[in-house]
Structure formats: C-alpha cells, structure tokens
Image (cartoon, rainbow, N blue to C red):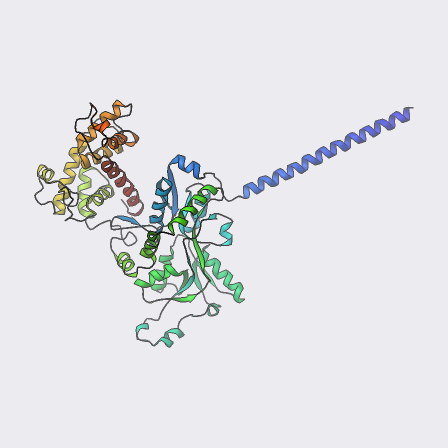
Amino acid sequence: MFLCIFKVMNLKKSAFFIVVLIVLSGCSKGDRDSAEGVAKQEAKPYHTFKDLEAIKEDGVLHAITIYNSTSYFLYKGMPMGFEYELLSRLAENLGLKLKITIAEDIDDLFDMLNNGKGDIIAYGLTVTEPRKKLVSFTENHYVTHQALVQRMPDNWRSLPGYKIDKQLISNTLELINDTVWVRENSSYAERIKNLENEIGADIPIEHINGNVTTDEIIKMVVDGDIKRTVADYNIASINKTYYPILNIDTRVSFSQRIAWAVRQNSPNLLKAINKWIEKEKKSDDYYVIYNKYFKNSRSNRRRIRSDFNSKNSNKISEYDDIIKENASEIGWDWRFLSSQVYQESRFEPNAESWAGASGLIQLMPETAKEVGVRNTHNPEENLRGGVKYLDRMRDNFEAVEDSIQKVKFTLAAFNCGAGHVYDAMRLAEKNGKNPNIWDENVEEYILKLKDKKYYLDDVVRHGFVRGREPYNYVRDIFLRYEHYKKFIEE
C-alpha cells in the first residue's frame, strides 16, 4: 500500500516536472521568438515614422537634397535646380509648404531620411538593389547610363581622331589595372565593383570623400588632378558643354533608372508622389524643366560661368556692395534686403511697374520725393531712399515687440501702405486675434480686405485692398531669404 502511494506520488512529481519543463521550454521559445522579433525590428533601416497624414498635419514637406549645379543652387538671386523646381510643384500639388535641407555629404542622405530629418530624398539617385534595402524608391524621373569621364590630350584640337582614340579608354576592358577615381559608397563605386566581376579582373579604385560632388570630381579630371571618373551621362554631358576637353563616350553601364526616395514605412507618401510623377510626365512642363538643366547647353554654359551662380562665388547680384551698405543702416541682414530687392525688381535698376514704381526697390514717384530721391533709376539713390522709407514704415509698429514680426508688418506696409495694415490689425483684434502678430493673425485679415463684408466693417478706414499681394510679398521674401542663407555667407 505504501509502495503504491509512493509510486503514485513519484508519477505525480514526474508529471509536474514534465509540465514545468514544457512551460519553461515554451517560455524559452517565446523569448527566442521575441528576441528575434526585436532583432528584426532593430534591423529596419528607419528610426522614425511619419507618413503622408502626419506630414499634412504638420503642413510642411521636408525634403533633403544636395547642393550642386543641377539639383539646387542660386543664380542671380533666384533658387533654381531640377530637384528644386519639381519639389516646388510637388509641394503645391500636396497643398504643403516646402522646406529644403541640404546634406553636406552624399553618404548622409539615407541616414538623414531614416532618422527623420526629412520626408523625401529629392536627388538623382540611381536605383540599385543595396539601396532598396534602405529606402523605397519613387517612380523614376528619367533613365540614363554611367559614362567614363576622361580628359583628352592637351593638343587634341590639332590631332586626327585616331591619335586621340589611342590615348583614350574606349573599352571597359582597358580599365584592368588602371585606376578610376569615384566617390566612396556611390552608385559609381558600386558599378565599378560589379564591372570587375563581369570582366573577371581587378580595376583599382581610388575613393573620394562623400562631400565632394560629381561636378567637383569632374572638374578634378579637367584640371588633371585625377585621370578619370564615372558619372551619369546627363551630368557628364552638361559638364562637357563648358569643358570641351572632356571625353564622355565610353559607357560603363546599361541604362539605369534615376529616382527619389522615401522611408520604407511611408507607403501613402510614396503612393501620392508616384501619382504626381505619373501626372507630371504627361505634361510639357516636366520636359521643359528637364531640358533646362540637362539639355540646353547654351543656357547651362552661361549660367555655370556666371559670377552670380552660387557655385562660383559668394555673390547674389552686382549690387551686393550697395545693398550691404544700406542694410546696415536699417539693421537688417544684407541677404534679407537682397531678397526684397529681388522681389521688387529682380535686380533690374530700370524696372518699372504698371503702377509707376521704378528702380531696384520700386519707389513710387511721390515716395521718391518724400525720401529725397531725384533719379529712381540710380541704384545708390534708389536703395538709399528705399531703406529710408522702410525705416519710416517700421516706426508705425512700435507696439509690435517681436523683431521678426515687426519686419513682416514693415514689409506689408511697404507693399500696400500702412493704412491697410492698420485696418487688418483692427479687424484681427475685433475678431479675437492678436493685432501685434502677423503670422496666422493679422495676415489672415489682410487677405479678407478684398471682401465687402470686411472692407466695409466699421473699424476699417482705408477700404478695399488686394490682400493677396502683401500676403505673398511677405511670405516670398522670407522664403527666398531662407534659400539665400543656405548658399551665401553672411
């Protein structure tokens, strides 16, 4: 009897231990699965989540690009570039403001995107398999191929073609044991490594830092600092228009797609961008923009060689010195005053408006007399008078404590008159808004002053005004100033 009870007890204990082992085993497996799941999650390239809905709630499309002669740059006071123009159209299509962040190093593009420093990489990226592990590519903007960029002999113009050919690499097999200089971690470096596998031989590679642009590397070839490099054919072709000594005829790749990219966890943004690209490619404007930067050699040559291309100098216009002198009189950043002058006349001293305003900063005849300007087409006189008038406008807004807001009121008054701005301030106060803040307060009521309901209000003393003009005037000057700050040193 005792023995039987003992056996039963042993059986129960055994069963208990088996159950415990099964539970522990299950926990262990679950822990492993959980750990593997965490590892997989950590392996994802992105570290932030922000899809189209959150972007629209924020109201701003944050784009990351590179500063170069085709993507984004400044020319004669105007931001330009293939990427910039298309981004502006995309932001407008999505009903968003555009904010551009410049990546100092091309290698940083993917990290910046996946760490939330932008919503989209707007730069000509070659679509490759390794990059697909990091980002989701949009529909391609265009197709190109990679070309070998090399320098022709110094006396190439006087040589017959066959002698020039003898000194150039015309077949990729000739690259065996001959060095190619390319940016590290670029699609060009990746292509040379693949080419090694295809031809079964070594091609020595000298890596160049990621913060050196393709244009700058090509210039190194022109100057004889390096023998050869690889570039997308359309970019190489632009450079050849103003460096005829370049040879770009040797292909090193098949056709490749060039696209933008978003984070892998932004499917709705990707869908919206692809829908926009599909629509854009059906319009003539899309190809006009492409041709402006990649096909029009005469325009490119003139632009690239200009002293007022931000890639060449720290200049905005030929009137920089005059603008700097006058900006100090009012205590403004000279780049900000330059943005206003561009808004008024695009730096044309003989510009005249339909209303009779003239000169660099567009003074009306009565205003010119008030500030002692005799010749409004004289740049020195015009700017001196314009700054004096701006100072007078600023005095109207002593109650505005914030310095940036005060500048916005000053600009609006310069554009449409202080009286209309005062009307908008009174309307804002009457309707529960802050009369001393322009942003999202007074600016809303300057817009409403085109409507009878508002310009006939009891607090309005100066009647109707096309409020969209001062509204856009203030906004555009500040937006352009943001571009100037990126390109031009203070």
